[in-house]
Image 1 (tube, helix red, strand yellow):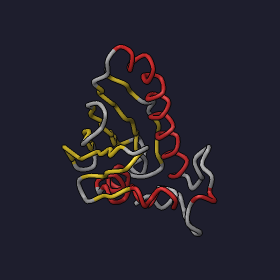
Image 2 (tube, helix red, strand yellow):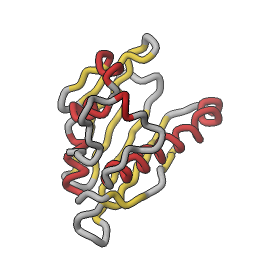
Image 3 (cartoon, helix red, strand yellow):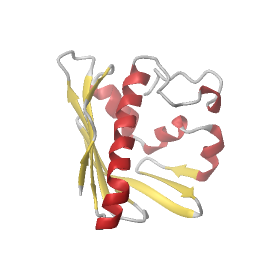
Length: 154
């Protein structure tokens, strides 16, 4: 099952946005303080304990400044996630989108398909907000360390 996020223009150059995602250790800085203890990461992978289950994601392909592909690494179902960093008309902005290919049975497609699309769209909206120096909608700033600056993504 292929699920595509909306596409949006992020106020960062493709290389800046790409560099924020290329190293999996960067993801930890965006987690609320109370969630960081359950997450480990190295350059190529990130793992977390979620409700007693170990779930992981690893980078399987890096195409500098244009695409990063992730795959499951101990998730309950197989998936691939591709982030696309395409140049926008302005060289300091990126046309960004996410595509997920997930191996879901009919019931899981029915239950999760729309929720996955909504989650991907929220990630895109959040990146746009952060690139413009705004806190993403629905994020409680008090959960982050004092001085957290959403505009500093890389």
